[in-house]
Amino acid sequence: MRRRLLTPGPVELHPRALAALSRPQLHHRTEEARRAFLNARAGLKRAFGTEGEVLLLTGSGTLAMEALVLNLFAPGDRVLVPVTGKFSERWAEIALALGLSVDRLDLPWGGPIPPEAVARPGYRGLLLTHSETSTGALNPVGVLARAFRERNPEGLVVADMVTSLLLTQVGLEDLGVDAAASGSQKGLMCPPGLAFAALSPRALEALRPRGYYLNLKRELEAQKEGESAYTPAINLVLAVEAVLEEVLPRLEDHLALKAWQNDLLYRVGEGLGLRPVPEEKSPATTAFYLPEGIPYARVKEAFARRGAVVAGGQGPLKGRILRVSLMGYFDRYDALGVAELFREAWGELGLS
Ligand SMILES: *Cc1c(COP(=O)(O)O)cnc(C)c1O
Image: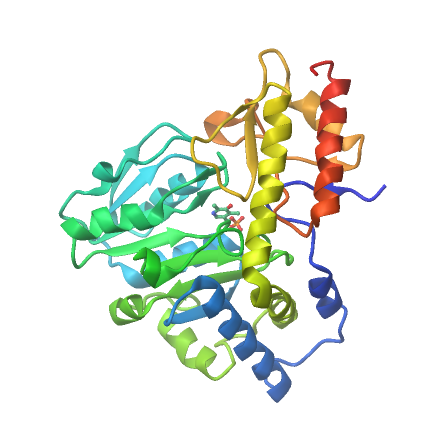
């Protein structure tokens, strides 16, 4: 039985990505490769909504997060990190590992971040998570960025947009976000392996390159010419290019479909008596608290018997929640099928 990934990354692949990946190996220092690289970069710039630059790095989403912290801040710089889940916690860990002075603002996981909490002076940066995939919460990065910037006019706002890119409206300059990170295996519906570092014009000005492989200034020079400093994951670049070519011309419809699909699963789950984890829901994934006495392993098994892979919780939510996501390639019909599968699995657990 072919197993469907209802996980919030990696995800079911877009057919255009699969087709691109079946091509013979392309050499990266050729005109054809440079054209694809430039197309992918142009598409990503549109997807991130920035007049700045997007760099394609070989690695997973976390790599882009690390590259941004490394190249935008210096050791000792004070940064503020509101922590409401596993991925916002990762920002704090990365900044600490790179020698920054980190003020960690611990708030309830899945809950909102009050704008007053980040309206504090004395910071070089604010590290935010747009869609907190570990809890299913969507944070109002625009509002938070504004509140922070009022108190820190020179400060930089950096956002994890790993599961908001192609899933909800992002737009760096519109939101007041200076730089953002994402990856290929989430809303892009491609395999894992590419990380994206988006830099607004303001972030480009603030760039203080550090490191060797992750030196973004050197990458920028190469990538402006359609190359990268070292061998890129060119096959994945072709996949990203192909998916963007298909999705960007009808982005509004795509975002509307993703929002509808996620709402559909929330309607099913809530109809079965499950309580959502997040207060503000991200279209990237659903997250529900498990009823008392129902071990996650049993839930996972009930889905697995139907050929579906779901996700549990991380950190303090481990064993306590269920996450079902239609972030990958699913159309309206697939989503209705998954909705029914969800009800069936719950029926088997004797809970509906
Ligand atoms: C998946 C994800 C990441 C990156 O994880 P990787 O495993 O490094 O790709 C970062 N932030 C969020 C919100 C994510 O969902």
